[in-house]
Length: 223
Image (cartoon, rainbow, N blue to C red):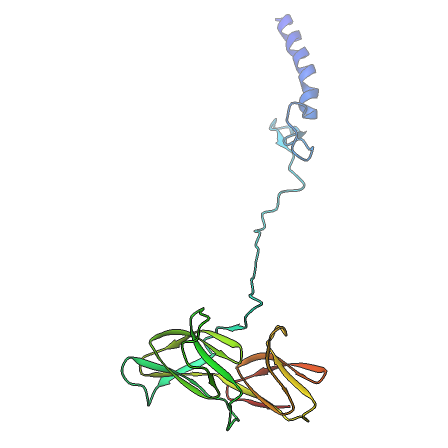
């Protein structure tokens, strides 16, 4: 019996330092022992040391955007309105383009295309226009601004929302209208000019100065 007590005491004497230092436990990736012992309370239960730098549980989000610098596209549910047509019968509707504040609007190019298409499906037109078309969606271009997926419904007029920028300047002063990126010129003249565009934001340039502006449906802005 004495021999057993002596052997047990020796084992405890050698094992206790190893337990207290945590030498028998693997280290974590940052060099801290993952489960080292910091105390042995009177209850005899071992309390592991907690990690002072817990891993973050915050979600990671990312956003991305892509633009096509070669085209000015507008797709908006408020870019047009549909109402019953007094002219269209049968299976067709029509796209109606009118320029506010212009008795003559012959310098403003308008056309309709298949969605995403490059070839016009309507005659070359300058100024006010009505385009009779079958039910469906089309792209409409006004002075190089293309509205995408404009709806045409049977027996309905689809009126495009358009405003007019009107310049009154001497004939030796250049006036220009650009899209919101300022990379695509929509209208150019020397002297007086009337430029019709879909409602939205644009940049105007008069001589060497430029200004951002917003135009609404039916609005005429004078410079």
